[in-house]
Length: 206
Length: 390
Image 1: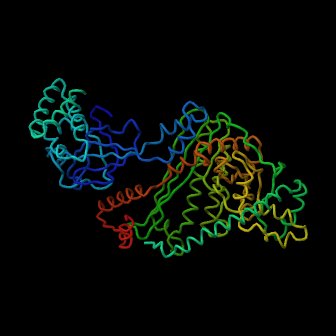
Image 2 (image 1 turned 60 degrees about the horizontal axis):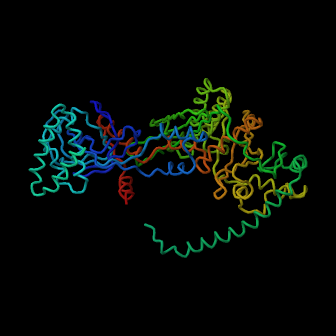
Image 3 (image 1 turned 180 degrees about the horizontal axis):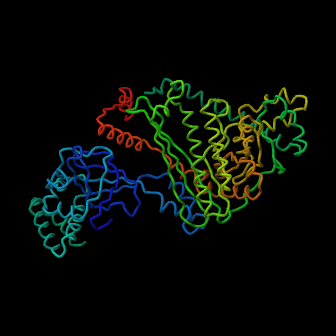
């Protein structure tokens, strides 16, 4: 994934609800987004955009590749061109699951944290957020609010990955940013100190 | 909704019928094997079938065109030569649908250029969107049928092959094969409308262009139907005086060449080349493009895949081309257990998926809205779409 301000379109929405959506993507392996990547999707007839976090990447079954696995071997000169074709020309069909964390009206509006008024429509195109957008979205630790309530996804892994990504965009103040986020988590999860400790340890060990 | 319980007896009867068919097939296979072993030599066979090749006979059986013995399969010659190029091509389409939100049709051709030199193959796709009335309706006002679209697709595939082969020829001095999925012989000879004649002329023109660029067009027919070889075996058994009367009275029933050769050819082996005196092939021959064919066993010992390979006579009669073609097809099919890799990839590139169709129609709808036009699929199409999701 690029760490500059470029954005990459990664695929189309396959199914969606208020809490998140799944994207079907056929892009070259190096461009498949990583766990915790910030993405955006148009909503409300393109008048607003939803922001979410990648929390699952699933390789779809590829019968073509399954057939080749038994007959083509790396290093065998008879397989050379086929392996090159598979690696360089064919794209990996993946399903990328995204959890919604907020939205904004227009491309320059202020981010509103929480679930959007409407999920993205099927086949709308999804793009990876540029660094500047990630910096803006993560300005307030409230971007984690929707995640903390969502027990259907690996939140306790997702939050550390996200905070670490957001902190690297704030050098040299990254430590201060992480401490503020830690305070926020301690306050929001005051009734579950074990969970807070678990999340903070993952940040510490990264 | 299908109520399986109502046809349970029919399903059981179907199974018994298949078992009986298989039993009978064993008997006719043994008979055909014996006829193959008893075939006379080439010259004697040629003379024997001569009455079927002249006059008003409609006989469409296989005619051996080389001197290789028919009862001895030809083994695979090894690996394809370095520098050989094969271009696989395939097409797909969206048919015009009067229930759709707008009347259009789409053709897409995909190709893979596979060079035996260790480099990465190249992918190529081309697409055509048609929406004008003159493209959608025939002279009598009927909406274009699936056969007309299939003809156009076949022409486009050969034209794309000709373009790619001509470009590839600049860098590749060796043999270049253009492999298409399906027969090389133009199959729409019976219905001679203006559209058919134009399409056939364009197709033969594209084959001629492939030839001009020193490329070799080849048709690959997977699991072929028909029994021209068995028809030859049958007539070889007939006394000369019965040839004209009984050539179409084979006792082999519906046994096909493919079923027979599954028992005769081992993986990697092929038959000699044959030709046929059909009206279709005679029209090809008149254009300098008579088609020869042979059968090849691909796949593995446990799962044999018999394919009919079609090539123009001017190419098939050259031993170097035939040897390279045999080796290339065996290598290509070995990677995918019985089907050429380049054709599978060309199909993948050409395929217009349901998701592609939805995306295309959404883009068309957006374009319509920008022009202030409101278009909807028919009520029937909407209802079917809902039921289709179940």
